[in-house]
Image (cartoon, rainbow, N blue to C red; front, top):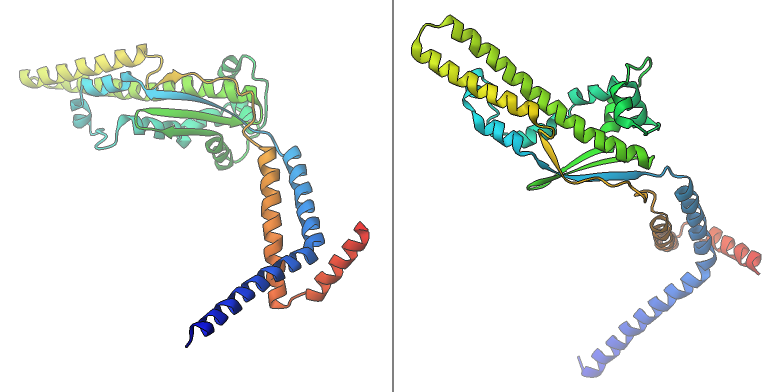
Length: 305
């Protein structure tokens, strides 16, 4: 095959490409009225949605695992081995996070009228801690699992290598801020109370065994274990931030995190514009509704003129 033949084929391919591109622009121009209407309608819907959507505010604080948990863990692991409560490979930090996200912890909120109301709807956040302490059992409550899912959607804990981020979302910025601060204090109390109860149970157990045995060596071992648990008990009771210590306090959320109106509207415009072109090209290629689409475009042009 001669060089002229190759050149002719290349020119034909280039012409086909130009024609294809030209056909596309002709198609786009012909369907521009319908594309514009579809994009405009979707944009109006996105604007309305962004205006009526419930606003969400988020408060967050940077935490670290308090040294008190490490100290009580380092005091003695012998007692845990004797009583069969050793945590194995699970770290105290992971256990503490799991506890405050558990259903057992959520019962403290579910059984408190004020806390449950603030979680599910809105409330007066002034003197939050005092009102939470006086909260009574609500007479009517939603399903426990439904409320718990709301709690897990609102309260998030993001673990990092050495730090944690506590986050709470709510439609009321004041509730978001106050609720998070209450959760930080209460979650520490919850974990601390569990450890205090474990130490107290161990002390009671070893004291009972100490009274039953007459062996001097066994008495020394039991006495040492009791002393260690007393030390753990004392450290637990005097630690305000037993499990989680604040590194960076939460600040009042002055700006909402949702809805981001400009992002919603701009994304809708781009997505609808591209999707409209793609669907119209596909319908034209398949030969579906071709005449009807042409008729719609013609009527839209008449209205514009």
